[in-house]
Amino acid sequence: MKKVYFSYSLGKINPTFLKSLENELKCYEIQVLNREVFNSDYYVDHYNIYKDNFQIDSTNADLANSMQNLINKCDLLIAFLTDTNYNVIFELGYALGKGKKILLVSDENVKIPNALENVRYIRSKYNDNLIYDIINYIESVEDIQENNKINDYEDFKRLLTLYVNDQNVLDQIEPNEFEDFIYEWFKKQGINSYRNENSVDVDYDFLLTDYYHYKKTLVEVKKYNSNSKVSVGKIQQFLGAIYFCEADHGIFISSSGYTKSAINFAKALNGPKIELWDIEEIIKNLH
Image 1: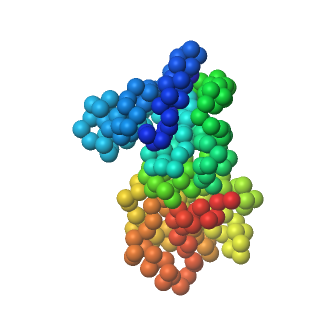
Image 2: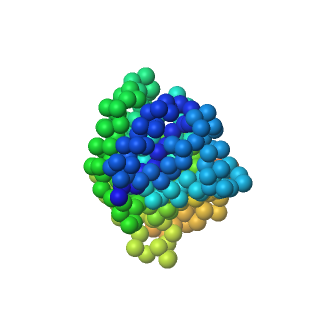
Image 3: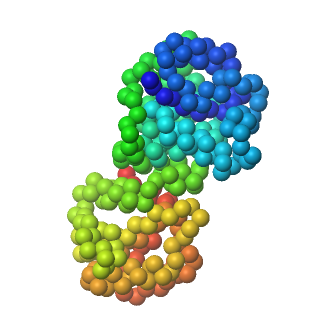
């Protein structure tokens, strides 16, 4: 049985359409994990519905965890884009981070964000034809895989772009996944890239040769939560690895930015240059 999660801003979708959609989904034995969206009053706030149905006291962390647990179980997230998409962007970012199949639905007047242009979408009026288009797409999606991770490079790039609207989306990526996709990007550029097979002795993640005008570049990738920044001590350790490996360049890549002292230390170096990349820099360089 297919499992679907619906993401939309309540009060923006015609309730008659939603009721018809619910009835058709039952006929096809498609399970809607957050089916309370069909059974609550049209004018009730989106988050209050979840708060009541999950019987939780807050509408922040506990609510987010409840939504995330449902998205983890789904085969497909269907996002209805309207002129107000705050919760939808959050849920989309999380679903992309988990490698979920995504279907965007909107009418002709809604602009789809550039970061989502390559995601499968349907533009249509909210009528019976749209219902059948949605069901046909659901039927075409394979059932959930046991270990569902980000496994598509384009999904990773779209997820990074969603960071502009919601800095928490990257918290859903595991550190090793973040490192793997950064490494893959360098490989896709045709750059000679080599994993560090001796990380116990020297602290860096991979080595680049002939990167621009540098003979040897060390790359260190750190995936922290959105509230943590890379300290000056980490940059000093990285500089030690650069000298030990006789490299002439370093790139430190962080998902969460740097302390002021770390930035000042890197700027003041007279020896090998160390570039500090944050998410904005990563997005600029990921093509």
